[in-house]
Structure formats: structure tokens, C-alpha cells
Length: 211
Image 1 (tube, rainbow, N blue to C red):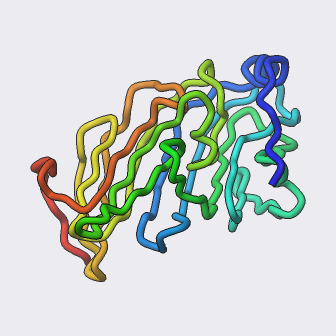
Image 2: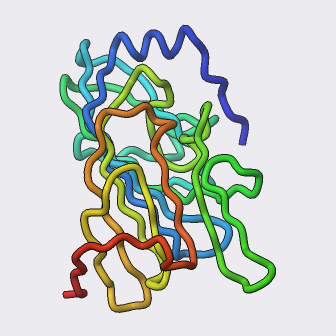
């Protein structure tokens, strides 16, 4: 896939037009060793209703794009690492579900397997513009927002993120969902997780069994 450059003029126009309230990002790291499932729910305002803009996303496949409850065809809207958004309202909610690819070079969401014991370790490194390889976002530091982050992992893994853990929910199928408290307003590249095959750094928190 050809990836569009992030240009100064385009980001200045996007910052003039948009203000971002929050991201709810859910990453599922249990679907395989090459890709992971990413779901972003973004709430943002538009200063000029009816305008068009775009959100950044570099992915292997996009399963769903929904703007203000209306489904958008990924074939029509997603190209060159961008999702086109038209007919924006004053207040908007965008939901994007995609499969994104792990990296092995320390950028994006890096995944490594320890050759000694086969355990898996992952971590993020987004600066300057690799957040778009992990979740749909407005990839520029002047569009800050609060993040609520959740990560689905094998149930023997641990996860760390920017803010304290809220809860761990055991799904009953060998996986667990780790949900973290909302962050202060952050730039997109400051969202961080580290997840892997160890309980040595697991924080203490309440657990909720599968229902």
C-alpha cells in the first residue's frame, strides 16, 4: 500500500477544522502472530458542519467504518493510509475496526518471541507517526484527546499502559481483557502499551469473571 505523506498544510487545516474529545481504543492481540484486531471509537467536533476531512490508518484490512451511525464502504473511503470523511456534523463519532500488522523493527506495535523459551513480548513506539499503524486516529500532536485503552490478551499475559488499570475481565476462553483508566489529553504518539508472557509486573486490581 502506498502511504500518503503527512503534510504541514493538511494538518494545519485539519487542526483549524476539528477538535478531538476522546478515543476509545481496543486492541485484540489474540488473533495470530502476524496481525491484531484494532477498534477505534473517536469523538470529535467540526467547526464547519458539512465539511470533509480524513483520519489516518495504515492497516492490512478494514472491516468497518461507521460515521455517526452510518456505515461507510472501506473500498470507497480507505486508501493510501487515510480514511476520507465527508459530510461531518458539528459533533461526530467515528468507529473503525481493522486488522493491523505487528512490526519487528521497534516501531508501531512491535512483537518479539524470545528464542530461549518461546514467550511473546509486545510494546508500542509511535513517535513520530506510527500510531496510525495501530489504530485509526488524527495523527498530529496538536489534536490531543483523552484515551481509554483496553487490550485483549492470552489470560497468562500482563499489560501495562499510560494510566492505572481499571479491571481485568476473564473471558473464560483462555483470554482476558485489560481495561485502563482514561488518560489526560495526550498526543496520539504518547498512547503506549506493553504486553507479554509474564505476570511479574502485573498490578493488583479487582478481577471480574466472565458472565
